[in-house]
Image 1 (spheres, one colour):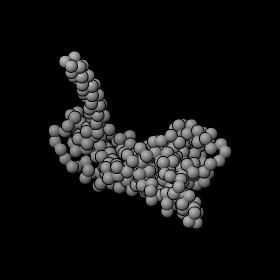
Image 2: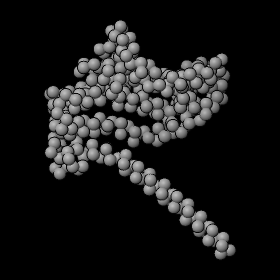
Image 3: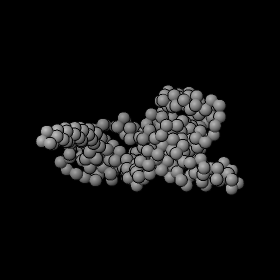
Image 4: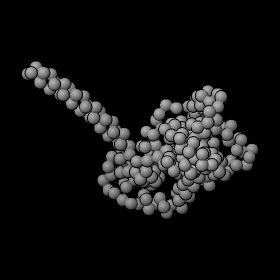
Length: 287
């Protein structure tokens, strides 16, 4: 009995040690990951001569006041341009993604699996590989100087993000579709009035993913904007501040802009995080 108690105690200590080191590593990684964000937030309230310190000696709201009153840089314009693009993209991309996912989940047809694999492989390639060709196509259509070119570009690949949504629809019983069809409902009615009300988690997840993509994108937006201030998103505008002005002088200004830009994403995520997690876990099934 004594030996059994000792063995149990050693096993418990071993498990506790493993758990302690695991949590310690996660805490260290979290702190390292948070350092740039803490510095960004701190410097947004700092002055130019405080930049050499991690936390400013003197705090001020001047950077935020300057951000919204600077006549040289239209931060409000960048913000609302980005918001407009993100809102329209989130609606169109969500609709296309969910319709594609539902079709692939419910409809049986030849070459379905090869088609899904091909879409998945194509989706692994970064979108900027075709940005030059895309720009010239948009130019031929006289859309290269309009923000709708960005909306079209962000929406175009929506169907390729079907995988998690399809996994979610696979978990929704097909008997619901059959019951609705018996009552005389067509495919559109089933999708919008039967399946969609049950799919709030995956809708929220898809909307969040569609909203954040244009919100934080720099490469695509900077290439299509091509020096046209009317098409500047927040990411492009903030980069232009540091690129064309004195870096040291405008660093705190840039930090304030980055903090304001991140606020909508943070608020949306905290409000909808329960549905976001349910959407990810609900779609994490083999399709």
